[in-house]
Image 1 (cartoon, one colour):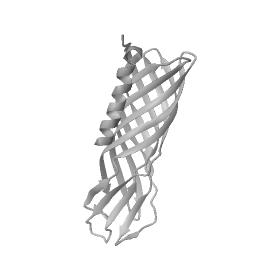
Image 2 (tube, rainbow, N blue to C red; image 1 turned 90 degrees about the vertical axis):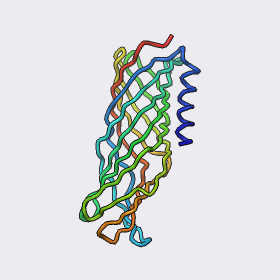
Image 3 (cartoon, rainbow, N blue to C red; image 1 turned 90 degrees about the horizontal axis):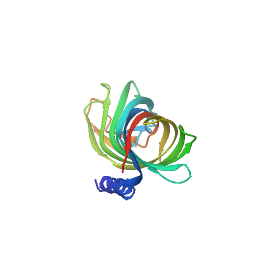
Image 4 (cartoon, rainbow, N blue to C red; image 1 turned 180 degrees about the vertical axis):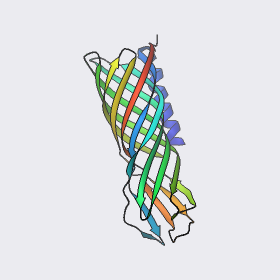
Length: 212
């Protein structure tokens, strides 16, 4: 929670310090996500890793655009993001669902009137993790997870007046994991999942009038 509050204060300080140069907006979109590997734990013996298959998720939230000289701008965003990843494990499948608060802070470059290129960090606060599996692993309970991560984003976009769209690639910069306890019908004692994700994001947005 402390990391989330710091990130929110950072987001707010950027906006308040540059209010006279702001454009506001709302955005939403889809993310094509894959988390890190999943490991089964048998009495302190860790299995070989199971790789993640990519799944669709979604995101929505707010954006602001701070104009700088030389066709540059800064775009802080405040987003709610839902991701899903599936893992083929032994004779079944496990699925990890995560909910996050994301705060990307991106430096962008405008190309002519409609094009743009941008990159920057994305500060992530995980608020929920849920792991489900087929019947060979049952009664899964979350033990704990790393709630803060930093990722890097890079992307391109098009802007048509107030309406715009962009596509991004994102990868985690910090190793994070979630731990789950299993009390099912097999000898599996627990599950560990690398939660630093790699994903593509496709978004659309609408900007309001510039702040006076």
